[in-house]
Amino acid sequence: MLKGKTAVITGAAKGIGRATAIRFAKEGCNIVLNYRSNVSDELIAEIEGYGVECMPFKADVSKFDEAEMLIKEAKKKFGSVDVLVNNAGITRDMLIMRMSENEFDSVISTNLKGAFNTIRFASNIMLKQRAGAIINMSSVVGLIGNAGQANYAASKAGVIGLTKATAKELAARGVTCNAIAPGFIETDMTEVLSDEVKNQMLASIPLKRFGNADEVAEVCVFLAKNRYITGQVINVDGGMVMN
Image (cartoon, rainbow, N blue to C red; front, side, top):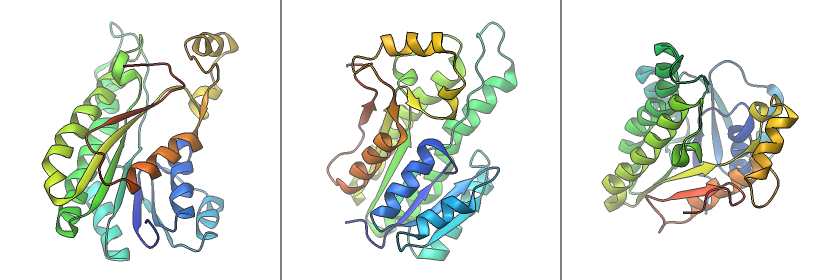
């Protein structure tokens, strides 16, 4: 179903974004690999090894004009934008009583406004195509909150609201929009945690292990293929949050 389609993945240089880019390449998608600082030649070569084209594109999606250029160049290069995965995200953890304005604003700007920016431009293309899938990366923190992450929790809760509103607006033209809420996934962010913190996290996960980026990427592909799921939040968290 996805062979020959174009997938734009933001924050794709590492972690969940990297795994997602590779997973869509395996499905035969041409990949627009968005990054903000740098991306490895090894990743580009791996993606192209699946017989697809890869266009690396440096852009800070929190900036409206750069997000516009990302989507515009994707359409120019491949002729369509069929899948958009809004994965770009940052953390600036701090207790709310000590959190600076910049620490709050920067997280909201990247995690929430960045998703709005790309949707703003990709939706026009998808509506004309009468097809497309938008997948926004939220977090279980956006569902239940977390001490020291008021900015991150607010941004990820906002992503869920953005997802549901977008789904309602675009559904009539066959465009879906869903969110994924990962739990504790093995990435660079979790590697720096102490064993004590990791053990506390594991105690809250019924499956008693961290997830991995490939398990999140698989759900991205599933949502891109399914044409009758929209406006939903899929938890990938080992049972940590059960609604």
